[in-house]
Image 1: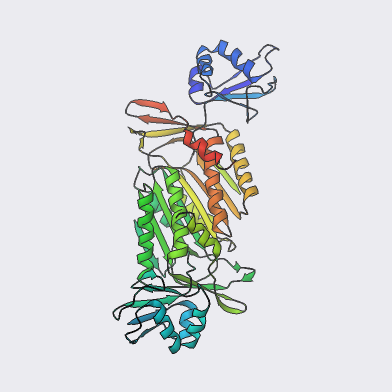
Image 2: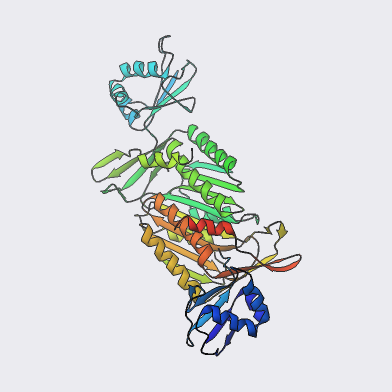
Length: 83
Length: 83
Length: 149
Length: 149
């Protein structure tokens, strides 16, 4: 599974993307966020603040209950501020 | 008094502006329109149709009951269609 | 704050580039450009002539612009309106509003064109295959104006 | 229907002049230009860097544009959005919508920028006298988006 991090979340994980292989019980975005939080404690801090971490799977916005698969590109980022 | 006509009202009076000297009892826009209608019968026709003839005195929109004076520049025109 | 009423064509892009430049306090610029269409109510339009009331036109446009600046915090405003004869595709009017934030710029620009349409003394005369005709005022323009009352 | 996501600067006026030209069926063109401001919430801004999500950005902008074209009868639409580092006064984004009538052009343009602000994956990082900081999302942008739901 490929995970990408953007903006200040990228600064918290220290990497813009990584290839990971989470255990089989990590099947949802919520579970993946917990698992990633164990790898990157400062990511876990951000997740503790409500509404701050957004997720996309294969470049589509998803909620916490969305299913993740090994072949997915998952992205975590703060609320967007373009325009 | 100077009267100016615009757009198809100008075509009905046959002139774009004229200097006139209406009698002293012509003190309102409504009275002036009647008086002008006697000079220009096709102007009177237009006035018979409701809401079609607009008036400005000294370049400000006015209603039928506004007062006209000999020194005024009065203009008659259809609803505006710019932009 | 600029109002120009002119017979000469203008280049909307060149005007807008100049309008956007030179003030780094501006965060948003909203513009509207009105152009001569080649069709109107199903009939071909070969040319359009805009008659106006010189003097009153400038006065009304300046009033409209002043009203926009009373209502919104604007850094700049611009109104350019042509008169005379023009061909399909040519710009007739450009309105623009600049502000620190986009909401004010967008609302002011919409206000400027809605208000201008119903109070600036211009009259459109179209030439087509069946000769010339004066364009009628549209009720939808009055409705657009009333949104701002 | 055009979406461009690019690092290079662009000239909004040149883009708009081209956008207005060549289709005499267009009666109204509405545009919005967003620019880098030299102040933000009272603090000086020396430069801004826009990070984006390559691929998803283009996809989202194309969805936004397609949605605008579903909602309004548009002849043309244009979205140009920069990424990378830029200085105060530089254009960040241009959206434009062209239609036979002004109401559709204005509403579509406002929709495009409101929707883009809340769904295109861009993140602003500002440099100022106290170093760098990430710009927070604004509740007013969410409110602007909800007008169109």
